[in-house]
Length: 405
Picture 1: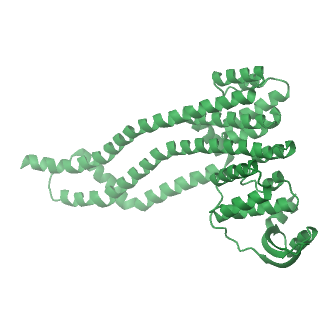
Picture 2 (picture 1 turned 120 degrees about the vertical axis):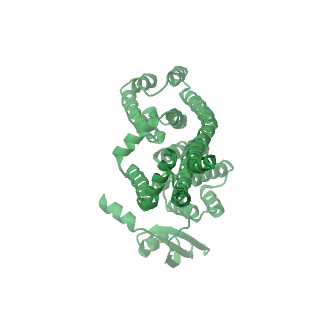
Picture 3 (picture 1 turned 90 degrees about the vertical axis):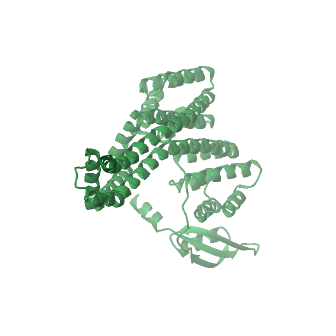
C-alpha cells in the first residue's frame, strides 16, 4: 500500500503531441510516472507520439468549493443538453478563468479517455470530490441517469455553499469589528496617549483615576507592544493550526460551537439542514439508506452529528426504523423526527427530508438577519465604550484644569 502511494506521488504531468490512425494531429496532457508510461498508454490507444515534455508546475490559483460547484452545474447543464461527456469537459475547462480548475478538468478528462469511468476519475482527486460526490456519480453511471444526478448534485452543492456563506458572514462581522477595535485601541495607546501624558506632566496636579488607568495601559503597550502583538498573533496562529491538526481539539470545538449562546443555535440549524439535505439527495438517487448514512455524517461537518450518524447507521442496519434511531441519538428536534416518521410511513422519505432541509435553511436565513440586526447596536455600543471611554479619560484633566481657571 505504501508503494502505491509513493508511485502516485511521483506522477508528473506530461504534455504530448502525436497522430491517430487516421493521421489527425492529437494533443493532450497526462499524469504518469515517466515518459515511457505515456508512450505505452498512448500506443495502446492507437496514437503515434511525436513529442512529449513535462508540464511546467504552478497552476496559478487554487480550486475552491465554489469552483467545484460551478463546474458541477455546468457539466449537468451540458449533459442535459446532449453534449458528449468529453466535449463537456473541454468546453468547461477552456471556459474557466482559473488555470488550476482548467488543469484539474483536463486531468480528469485524460483519465476518462484512458479507460476510467467518471466516478473512478473523480476518486483520484479526493481533495476536491468527496465520497458523497463520487458515490452519486457512480450511482448515476450505473443507472444511466448521470445527467439527472449531476443536476441534483449541483443543486445540493449550491444550497450547501449558500448556507456556509451565510454562516461565515454572520461570524465574520463581529470578529472583524473586534479586530479593528483592537488595532485602533493599540494605535491610540502607543502613539496618541503618550502625547497627552507629556502634556499632563506639566500640570503639577494629581490625575483622575480613569486617566491614570489609561496612561498605565498605554505605558504597558509602549513597553511591550512586540510581546502583545507577537503573543496575540502567535496564539491565534497556534490555536488555528492546532484546531486544524489535532482531532481532540476539533472534537472539543465542535461540541463547544453547538453550545455557544446565540451562535450555537444558528450552527445547530445549519448542521441539521446539511444533514437532511445530504441524506435526501443520497436517498433520492437510489442509494440504500445504510450506505447513504456513510456519507451523511461527514457532510454534516460536526463531530457530534457525525458520531450520532454512526449510531443511527448501526441501529438501522439491525432493523430499527430511521425515526427510532434518530430519536435514540438525541440530537434532533421533535419536528425533524415527526417529518421523518411521516416520510417513512408514506414512502416519501427523500421528499420529507428535503422539506426539513428547506425549513432549517430558511431558519438559518432568518437567524442570520436577526443576528446582524442585533449585532449592529451591540458593536456600536462596544466601540463607543472602548474608544469613547479613552477619549473621556484623556480629557478629564483638561476639564478639571478649565474648572480651576
